[in-house]
Amino acid sequence: MKTIQNISDFKQKALHWANQFEVCCFLDSNDYKDAYSVYDFIIAADVYDELKCSTGNSFDQLKSFYAKHKQWVFGYFSYDLKNEIEVLRSHHADGLNFADLYFFVPKYLIAFKNGSAEVLIGDQSVLEEIESAAFEHKKQSKAIQILQRLSQEQYLAKVEALRKHIQRGDIYEINFCQEFFAENAEIDPVHTFEALNHVSPTPFAGYFKVYDKYILSATPERFLCKRGSKLISQPIKGTAKRSSDPEKDIAIKVQLRNSIKEQAENVMIVDLVRHDLTKSAVKGSVTVDELFGIYSFPQVHQMISTISCELNPEIHFIDAIKNTFPMGSMTGAPKVKAMELIEEYEVSKRGIYSGSFGCINPHGDFDFNVVIRSILYNAESKYLSFQVGGAITYESKAISEYEECLLKASAILKVLGG
Image 1 (cartoon, rainbow, N blue to C red):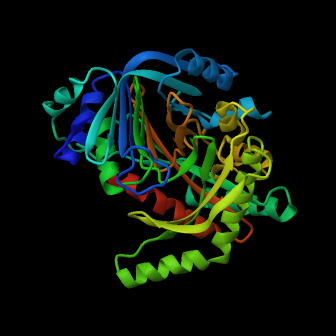
Image 2 (cartoon, rainbow, N blue to C red; image 1 turned 180 degrees about the vertical axis):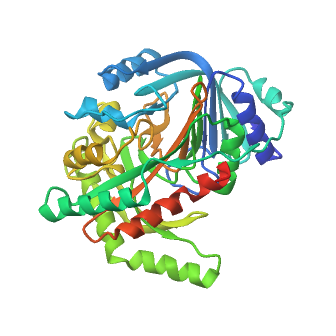
């Protein structure tokens, strides 16, 4: 344990130090106070052992991998693991080509809390190595030309078609997304992440490098975490653009809290998450700890609810993850039918987008985010992608949903110079 005087300097140096390795993962709370986070930030680097799955039974392979090591593991779940959980397919083009699941045991693990850094795995001398490290301060050299996979007209037509499915009773709500992308894009991933984390600091932000593939995330959403025998999920549904005028900003917050439309969207997903948690819970233990909480981030106010349960001791914690995956906030209700329609109406493979990354500790506690507000990058093919979306209900106005997508994309567009 070592007291750090200049925390932001140490954090930056630690990230650049970790980035020298072929695999690293940095998880940052950005000083948001959260009842379930254990560390302010945590950084895992270099590979002692790894698991990469793209061919089925990924969750069982992860169970075996974790049982073999009983150590800290860091990794991600791609959205397309849905095809292993349900009878579903993904046929869309994929410019990124991430594996469906990837986890690694790090050679180095440094955790930071309340002004002190602690080496959990590796030699203590690594802290001195980080503090004495030097790195270049770079900026994005040129704006990246960002293209949209759907035109505004195509997007609006698809939202109207989805509203007809809701009118017919096929679904109640669906999370419909669109892709922004760039080909032949050259970015410096670590500096791009730093810029994104500066423009849009969020409580579940992270930088994940897996060889030539990168997740640069400014996500505000927790998918699922386990603390002892308790499982906690915190879906986001409900968004409002912030104002620079403090009085107007408070009024927007109150308006979001009292919006019948946003509450309806949120409560449908709360019900879905309750149902998903029931599969893993001690009977009668699923509770809604907070309904319609309003939380503020640099660009937006969000409506977030918290649902928890006691994990049934007969259920493996990795099966509890599988039982709730993909997360309700990024699918819809009913979940399977919503995912079928997502495949039908979206035109890009989601892959890592609306998946999750995070870590599991040696005692089986874990914390995983939702991959939204995130830049995904394949450095070898130079393909860059980010997706944005929102909940479509019968009350949705297509043009408002389109504008919400642009709002959610704004921080990333700003960072990339778009």
